[in-house]
Image (cartoon, one colour):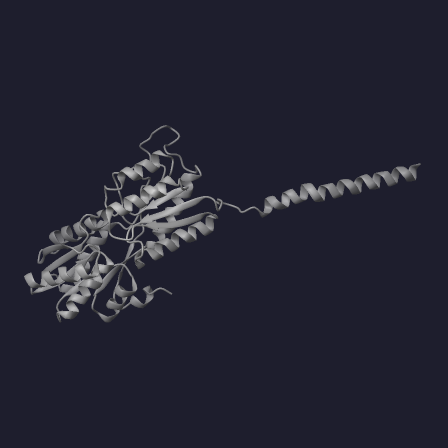
Length: 337
């Protein structure tokens, strides 16, 4: 009888050990294998919306957006207007909103024209953050990008260094886009305050187009044959300006400061046609845009503080992603690897 009881005890113990291994330990093992930290799902889709979507400038920012998505386990989509066209970007943004994505990162072609669509998205519960070009009058939660006024200050000081602090200079820009307005303002005000012998004689609209910008530079040189320098606030215009001074034989006279690090710009810096260009932290713009959207979507930050003070924003409202002055001495470091 005692032997039979012992057999029963052994059998029951074995069964309990088996059940523990199959159900309890397996469950704990699956918990241990779950991803730690911030993690979403692939059906959680975030969208990047911009303009002139096919240009090289956006590639590094999109890479940052995609790298953040990979780290978080979510999916992303890239959309934008094909032309430098306000209404086309508004239409693209409206189409994206209609699909109710998890969040949208927007670069605004115009500082006001997208406000209605951005506000519509936020009011519908879709988080929106701005990157590269802001829409400060909208309900977007934050802006992630270059401190463009300070970039203009940096360009003015570099221009003074290149020209010896005297002469006539011009600007080729996009006057309706806030980030370019701020670059121009920082440049102009710094010349007035710090370099009174550097005279800003003209500001032209290059429309973000290489050919148009080239013609605008030709026009400036027709009016001011002794022009010493040109500050161009975006990359296509910088290449256009470079082509103008090459074709006019003014490479030894006119110093060009451009923006960004597409291959065409870097090639002209390397050859000395463009004296310097300002590199932006574009990967950071994309990466931190998605990180902020993820926090908003998953309620890791609140639309207002716990004490009810709605004046305290849920996110840092401005993140400066920085700039670097690129010259022929260090240009090789900035080519895509």
